[in-house]
Image (cartoon, rainbow, N blue to C red; front, side):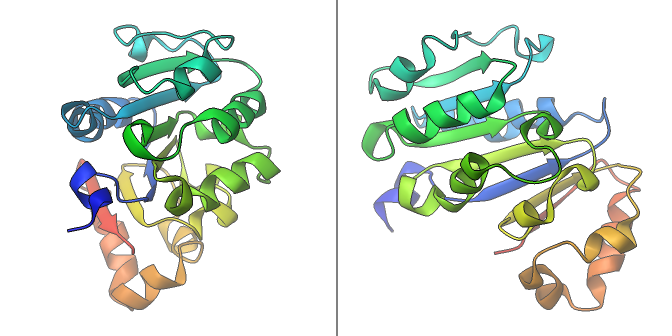
Length: 204
């Protein structure tokens, strides 16, 4: 087993999609974040506003973000919010200590606030870098339409809650690896998830 696997780092880009109130944040905190806490990893949750769902998580100011990212003794979850999301991305790309004890998990919540329909240079770099930088990246969105195709093409894990998406159209925006893996069954799989709480697809 590789050192990264032992550390619980898969270098995955994950998208969690679901309407507001469907439980995306609860799922992330209880099903995904908890194992990283147990492994004593760095877990950074980023948002453009002070969201009440994260009121029980340690808050760090934008002026503290760089230092928190660099320090190897500050582990576990932390929440930072700032209205200029690209500024946060610049800090993460520069200061999130990519190897060793600081590698871990980054969550971008409310993904519509992280792009304007097209991905910024910093966002593209964050998506491309996980394998080199040794972190897992998760984005949360209300709809698959809120996720640029350029990001969907780099996704390895897709977690779908109920949405109002036109699933037939959205299937065409998924990575070729997904459509190839599931072939004609892909559309049926995606349609079926609308009847359940969520569906978990590993694309890679």
